[in-house]
Length: 79
Picture 1: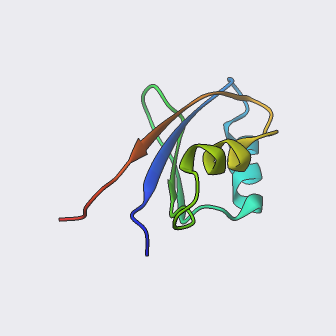
Picture 2: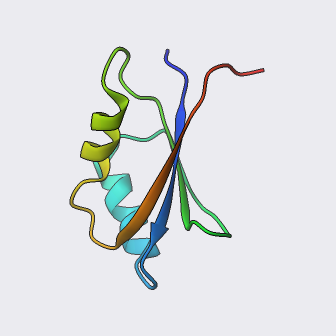
């Protein structure tokens, strides 16, 4: 299994639940949380092994209206 990556999602005001629902329907994630702070959602993803992570993330979120910004954090090792 690959190590996970985390994507934080900033949503336009009033769209967080719609965006969370759209992400849920696409089923590319392991876990999805609402969060406080600069970003509204946190998505845990296990990307396909050996694939282009940037392309995978772009394709996963493409076309979801209301997303203002994402921030992707790659992980390397769990302790």
